[in-house]
Length: 105
Image 1: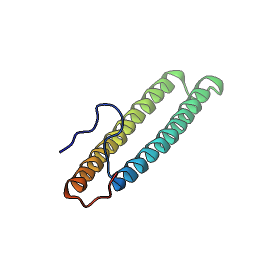
Image 2: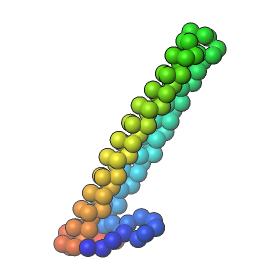
Image 3: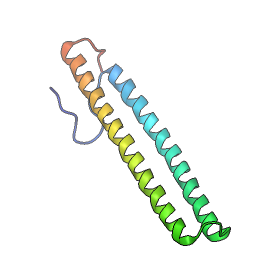
Image 4: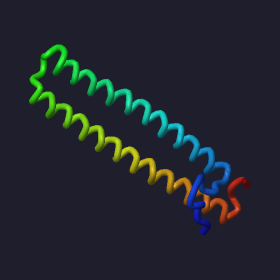
C-alpha cells in the first residue's frame, strides 16, 4: 500500500483524481454557501438587535451564540464526512492501482 506524500495531493489514478477534484469543488461550494448563509443570519440578528431594536440585546446575544454553535456543529459534521469520503477515494484508488484495473497516471 502506498502512502500519500506528506505534502500535496495523494497519488491517485484517473478515476480517483476525478472523484477527488469533484469532492474539492463541492467542498469549496459548501464553504461559500455556508459563509454567506452564516454571515447573513448573523448580520440580520445584529441589525434586529442594535439597529431596529426588535430583539432585546440579552436575548440577541443568546441567539448569536446559538447560531454560532449550530454553525460550528454543521461545519464540523460536513467536514468530517468529506474527509472520510476523501480517505475512501484514496483507498479505492490505491486498490485499483494495486489490482491494475485503474487507468494509469
